[in-house]
Length: 415
Image 1 (cartoon, one colour):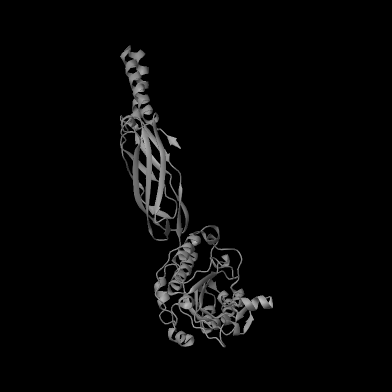
Image 2 (spheres, rainbow, N blue to C red):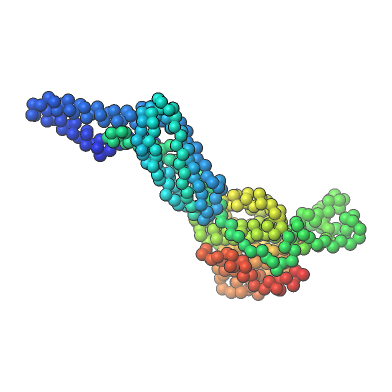
């Protein structure tokens, strides 16, 4: 979209020329007609100087970092390849920012020399913004406003298009859980008890939902025609499981429509990715699932920073969903022996708290992050063995994480 409105000076010149044409026959002064023609010609030349032989050959935009997190600063760089037959004066540039990105993208656009002498020109623009809301936010196009050397007309151009900036959920650095034995979980440090000599002497049992895939006895499975696992193998904190309850009944409808709109949902999602990053850095194999067992991302092996980056990027567009019941979660953990299990949800009801109780015996450290509790739901969850935390959007996650109660009891249980 390009517009060439007159400046106040140009508007005055046109009005003065019209007045000269009207007054010339009234006062019998032919020179007024000549004066009016000169003014019209000057305005026409100003338009021509902005329109003829002036174009933008290309606009390239880049972000550093290419994927931002909520609350982080982003450096935006724009390079404009421009060509102008006639020289232009200094103008103003302004970039368009979407909702959820804050900054002051405005500055001075340099004047260009004649392209007949120096050819095309390269203009580099840089500014900094802050990412405020999760999602994919389009920045641009770049708007440049210049005037002719006489200041009679103004040209407004939109250069390039809008380029999407991916804003991932905020990852809060959390303290290491020093009180848990086997800080490296199942991938860097595991304890295995086996009867007999070698894997062939292990007594297999039928696979149960929640069993680690690393425990599958493939030879026995082929012989029996069904998945079998090594019964005698015992791993110390083999993996951590994070459950994110995305059912829209726990959140507002804004969390279903678009990412970054429900502050409660954003606080919960930040808890999920922060816990996953902490466990993976400690060496746990991390699984992030919904309440029905659906994996939200591929399992993250301990120490895999690339997988962590991919996780946060994929969560940039995550929203709530219409279905899901927290009461269906417990059967997924039947027969499993896991390390930490973290459940992140919205408002918890007494039926939810009662349904979560069986999971406690399958986890070395069950943690429940909930935004609220109806009735005595949170008390029931706490009494059944969950370490319960009330999560609010303005809370400091670091203090909630480091203030896990009962760590000595957990340590004794794991040992």
